[in-house]
Length: 390
Image 1 (cartoon, one colour):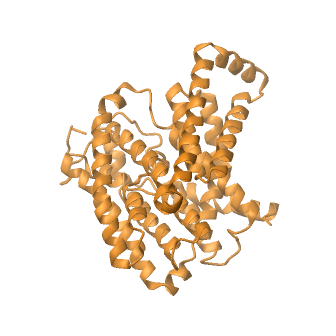
Image 2: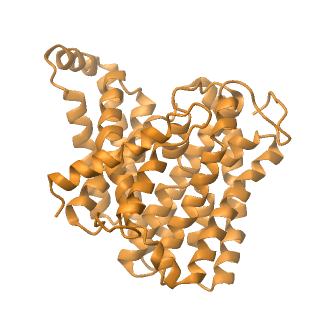
Image 3: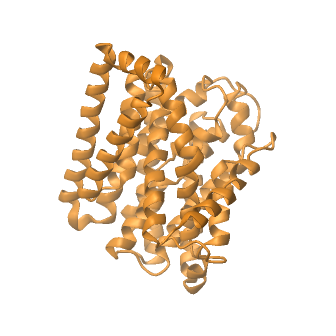
């Protein structure tokens, strides 16, 4: 069992994440350092952290739900500019999704796994929880960035819903009903939040909470999140769907700044690092050595994902933005977890899925500098010259 000593060690070594992000020249996502710590001290390295420990895994799942909630809440649903650029982002997400099908089927054929549909979902996915932190503190008003946000949201949400159907086709009806139940519950949350906002009830509660330091909004939000997570678990759906749809509900209504700061502090300061350290510790690269073909599979998935999303440059999308949309995290993690639990993945395949995700994370990290310049108004074309379109 994880005790206070192990928890203190996890939090201490997780500081490596922010330290790596300090250099101004490259916006290295904080999670890179946390993942590396997990690799070094987990199954691949010293094995001081045991990802199978129930307490460690449960704390990590809480972190996963909160990370997806923060990612969903970062989608500027109320921005007029987002709605005006939504058709462009939607078209790009759909185009990549269509191209991902033959690519996924081709990879499955080459490696003989029979999981082409699953690979297609992975290739088409994007991760707002990776891209948005890379843009933290930067303006989100550049045309190409505004067009990217709905692309991320659509790819994230669609692949989150499709993943359970792709990984366990034999239970497609049950899984679809579970996903619909979680989405419907999140919509009810949205309606309740909108009523609380329009009636003035939320503001009254906010003032009382702020004056008396009660953190009522945070308590209510966590209760709702954990309730949706419980529904997701009961209906055999990943909790990332619960967290992301709840984040979208808050974003659509307008998340109070004080609540946003509280949730962000809770996530980034404690539960988020625990999740990424747990994720890194669960990666057993030794398993890849025992299954050499899994290494090729992981590299193929990662490289193909980057290549597919980079095709956005053909639609005059700046190359750093196009590449950034290839970032994967939540979907591969859920795929590896669910696939292992259901026993549908082959030897080393779960680690291969995560290896593919790490390839996209590494590529996006290398492109973080140019992406930051785009966000600051200097959109770049394929050849590196400036452009004004999104």
